Image 1 (cartoon, helix red, strand yellow):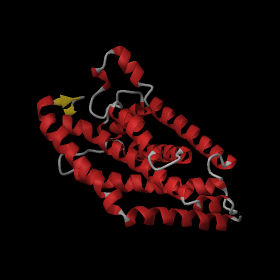
Image 2: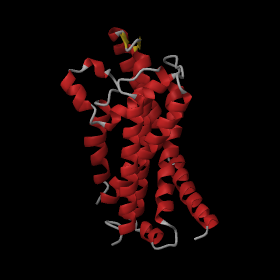
Image 3: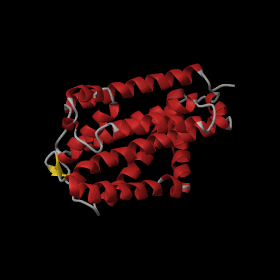
Length: 257
């Protein structure tokens, strides 16, 4: 395919992905705003007023970056896993795989679709957060970089989950039993300084620790881990997920029936 034809193919997949989640916005966008509002009220206002400061900031200011990242992670992931598994379930993905469209264009289309939903939800949640607390941008560059990298990483993770899923129940197992615990143990609601040395070391095996802390640095200027290490770890995880996703597409494993 020529570059122009590849661009048309990419835009076609991307438009389909964006139209899909915008068409059902009450299921894809609205729940995040409602859920985050409840988090802000319960953890930020009610519980936070009793906790006081954490890391030199009010508890509300401290948890907001983590909650925004939680929304980005879950939406980027769920958009790709549900969309690609739907295509796999109704066998339309097979037609896409036998077309002249390069596999990396197919993967890019789904990933960018997931990233776009993650970014849109991030904007919505940030606007909601501004009703509860003042947000100050410490480093716009870090914020943009970490949001994009995180969205790409978890969109790819959603793609891998969709490839291995055999039914619709399988696409909810990983978010429920893996993703949610990693998020809650990733420093969203607490500082790593509160943990004993052993558990703080164990927590560093959790990729969400680097995501949350890097974003918190971009917003507040504080982090429990080195910023360079955080970017390095997220970059490594993203590269691994990309190459493995391409491997699954190139081999057609669990895709061609």
